[in-house]
Amino acid sequence: MSTFQNKVIAITGASSGIGKALATEALKRGGKLALCARNLNKLQEVFSDSENVLCVKADVSKEEDCKSFIETVIAKWGRIDVLINNAGITMRALFEDAELSVIRELMDINFWGTVYCTKYALPYIRQNKGTIIGVSSIAGYRGLPARTGYSASKFAMQGFMEALRTELLHTGVHVMWVCPGFTSSNIRNVARNAHGSTQKETPLDESKLMSAEECAGIILNAASKRKRTVVMTTQGKLTVWLSKLFPAFLDRLVYKHFLKEPGSPLLKYEADRQ
Image (tube, rainbow, N blue to C red):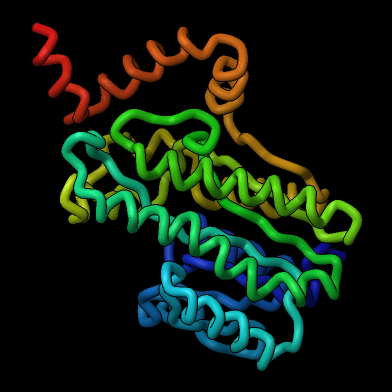
């Protein structure tokens, strides 16, 4: 029997990408799904409300929306066994050029969205010795150029999750964060530019990236085994290792890597070097 059979699984940002794939896979594994997204119509195009699926409109950057989402789940099923904090956005702009509202929006969604949902779900998860998951990034281990707000939000998420895990060490609650590598999803297409508008394009070849479905399978398998953390790719594991042992060397590697991406914001600084 699946670990998730008849478990109530709440997933944020479930209308596309990794969130959508997580919901699809969790449903296959027998879970009862509570899904939220800012665009309810888009969410319901994929998942219709049914006996085993609850779709809720919620903007996780708003505390009241998160509270209402959790209360709606409890009203339907009376419990939450797994909370997957997946909702997130990214950015691509030099900090020098970025409006501060862009950094604030990333923190509000990626970090505060996790905090709000976890705060209101925690009492119910404690009752069932359930699981809290944060979908983070390698950017939570290693700051990435032209993604200062994104890295800051993921560092904050991981610090929050680690502190929470230690607080709950003897309660039976499982706290885990996962760090996908570059995954084929919608997140880069809606990445914010320096002024907060969506870039509507990705600098990466999506066909060469891990699929959202593969990523979702890894996350749910790790959750069923109550893993502490998961860094999914060889490149990601190498980055974490080098960050600990050779940070200055990694500074240069990371700079060169992101300098090569199409339309890299770092080209501005390269021009200054000429």
